[in-house]
Image 1 (cartoon, rainbow, N blue to C red):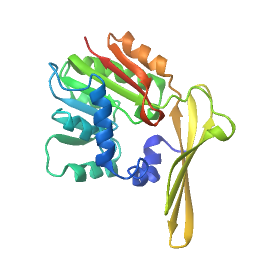
Image 2: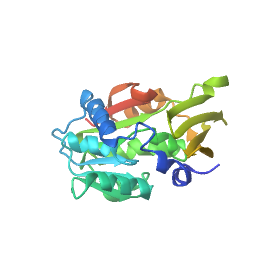
Image 3: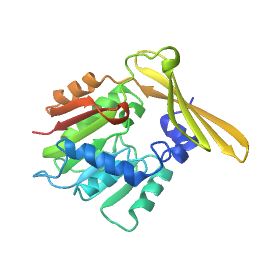
Length: 250
């Protein structure tokens, strides 16, 4: 077992772009459509946005394409930030930042200054504790300008999967196969075992790493956001089985 940060550094970062299809631009286009279907375009709140847990940047690229600028792209993984920087080239619209997503808003955003905060792609479940999860919308509420939007997405693992339903195929190509196996630890935690087979010539190799994820109820997270005075405009399952919450600061 390792932490989520260690898990990405040890195994997942090098496969992260491959997992959804290998084309970050295409994933970014999908994310832009998702955000534009919600209350997700720049408005009276301005154009400054923060992407917490940006990875190689599909959400950051989507925000930039929708007119947000600048976009502060925050992640703990330097290889993923380097990949994002390669996608953006010399553009100053997206600004990669190597930082802890739990403290980034307090350290790098002024109160009532942001048009949008997004934390997507199952990032909330990677936080160490449910207290960290509840602190995230609280910090966002303080940094959002009136009319600013918070967008969260995560996989709700509160209903336990049993038997073969615990095994989740991710993707398979000629030289790579990835499967996740879930092991329920307690009411708050599930261990995610990532199994990645890779082929070199005629030989297949297997690498395995496991890390804990939080079991976050979608209704609970929406209620937390609403309890902070945010207006929850959308809460429903979206692409790839991720639950999407959109909340607006009045």
